[in-house]
Length: 385
Image 1 (tube, rainbow, N blue to C red):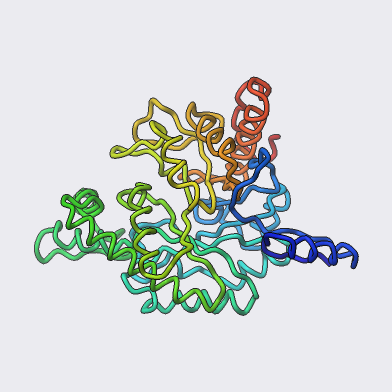
Image 2 (image 1 turned 90 degrees about the horizontal axis):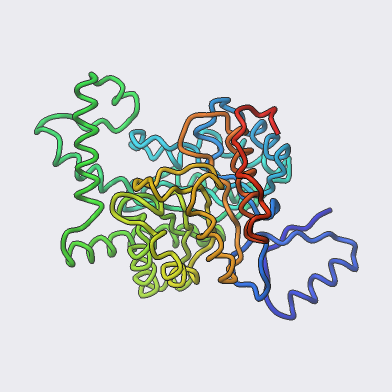
């Protein structure tokens, strides 16, 4: 038998481990963020987490097929996201997972650690969304306690859309409703969506910024309280827009501390580190020093300095990600690193293979500059090595 336990600190942890070893029980410490006094091997395969492996997969794998794929790739940790459809938000499809039990059971069958579960809760009151509690109950049934990654609520966008669309025009809240619109209607609505996102995600005044922080902190606090009896920690996820700017997340964290939530953490995504409004790469060492104590996980992609919109590419294919990872590693931070499935429809196994190849190149360069050789060319099929 192998015993999975969470990281402990101090002498008690050493005694506990020694007893387990004497009993002949192998110990697998669950991945947890922190600081190491030695140089951490952040990009070791055992530390990688498959992220966004379900929604973009053109193979439309079942949970069991997905778990088998992870075994083939040597991936031991998984962060789950069911859907990325912005329009399918009426019933919070991003947390109304298609079959929660099947997903968990498949991962347990193949000994894949479910590190995190992404909750995109489009409501200011998570407790009022039935599927949130249903998912937590599934965790309880299967005795798992994943981190809960939560981003912004699209309630802001809906508020803005209602103001942006012509009076009396319906605001589609589901993909089928959106698909019924004519091409011209879709274009108008998409333009209204972008306008609403720009206006509502970036408060124009100090008072509006304060209200946004208060609103998000109250929403997250409610989710924290809801998840606590299930022994699940809630972490902020730097998605795009206002919520993707780290200073705003730090403001939410500080407000949560005032509300009695002292250990709030965040997930830092390279994929959301650059857009038309901000560019973390420009001052990353200074930014990392501020956010490092709060970072629970880092999700890595490639980034090109010539692309000011921050469109992600495979790790090793950009010119910014190596320097950012070097800053993280040299800071002594340790924690799980996500191998991201890029924002495109493709065979997830192909995408993950390319991500892992790129991460291996980064690992070699971090250990010894120049030792990685030529940047690896992305494979085009799962059979390529």
